[in-house]
Length: 61
Image (cartoon, rainbow, N blue to C red; front, side, top):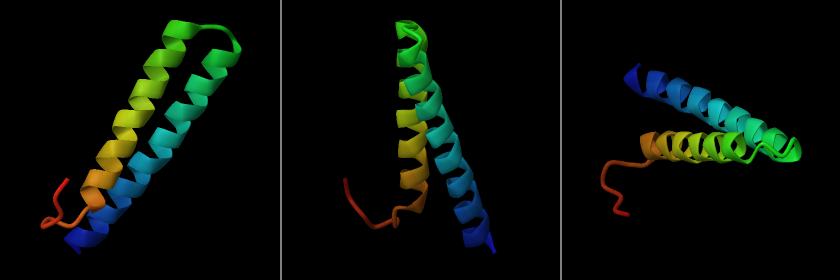
């Protein structure tokens, strides 16, 4: 049961990362550099969080 909850949270984080990357690319297209940098950084950190949650406990970096 707990594993399923972790999987759902990870998928939600993955979707949020995709949304943040989309916002970043859109901001780049509008020439809003600071907004683009912010959204791309948020997307990268959210994607890392999603993948870290799914990584097995024994795996090393």
